[in-house]
Length: 220
Image 1: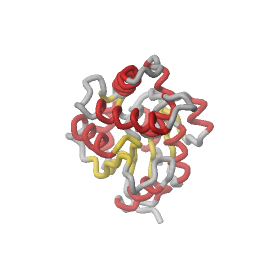
Image 2: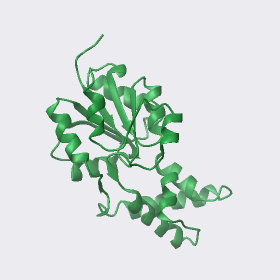
Image 3: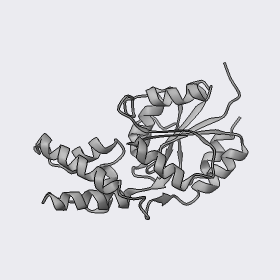
Image 4: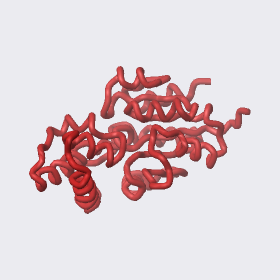
């Protein structure tokens, strides 16, 4: 049953906001404090996207103890949560895209694997002028993407069948989430991963600039 509602759900990091440098700097600070190997900023493109636990796993040697992993996780949260980071900003064209989506009466949601309190904080700071009806980060009681539960819940709250919803993201986790939820997957090429990864994980569309999304969602 077609409802006529227009719904689009965005990933946050690598899709709406460029947060890579701030995440990398904070994690490198923690790794240096603990005398562990650290990385170039660009290397973090392949560490992020799955939440803090995956970031920590990717940044540490596979043989590292769980005790050290826990210590890195807790310290990273402390360092990263000290303030809103000045270099974390929306990608060029994102504000213009959101302006146009609101003109088209789209209902907008955000679903991130970033911890929920961080997600809400960044959305409030950077997107307060927009009527973003559903904002969800990682919560203990809800499985992380690519599990589809959170995305499905957003569709239900916005009273729209999943097959009518667009899901926009920059990693395989986002494309898998869209496929698992039976949503239309839009992969963005300005984020943390490349075209091959997005296509291999189910992207229905690829876009090079935020405003390219309008050409997709305006199709009849």
